[in-house]
Image (cartoon, rainbow, N blue to C red):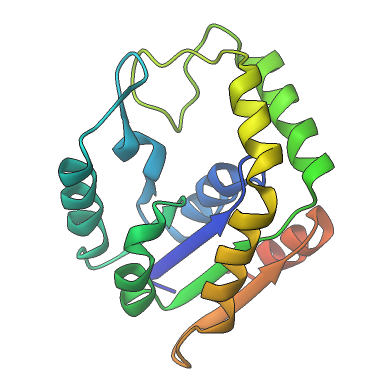
Amino acid sequence: MKRVMIIGGAGSGKSTLARKLGVLTGLPVIHTDQIYWTSGWVERAVEEKLKLISQAHKRESWIIEGDISSTFPERVARADTFIWLDFSLHIRLWRILKRIWLYYGKTRPDLPKDCPERFSWEFIGWIISSRHTNRMEQKTVMDNLPPHLDIHHLRNLTEVRAFLATIK
């Protein structure tokens, strides 16, 4: 395990799993939210995001978590391990509300400096309205993975814990 790609919907636990895997493996962790956003919740220009994610996946080793989907083909080609966190909508919404409660007004470790957690009905609405489209996009990626990958389709916390228990 040298290059790990983690995808999943908002609130599925991508950042948490990446951090835990990073501790267990010693691999550097790259959060795509740190590429997508700059301080103050300012979105980077598309060209800059693509340049930064390209630089990240060209490294010798990494754990990249996140869904900048236009870069999936390049990451899939370089990865040796693929993890899809495919959690139900109600679990993801619960986790997002919990995350807002825990970090409200503070910046989470997986975000750039000065991006304090906030509540947004728009974000909640986007999660709900895009759940089928995003899941089908992720399923299409999963269904078309090359044979060189070690593939993990994790659907609940029990499966995540069992996977982590196999990491030495």
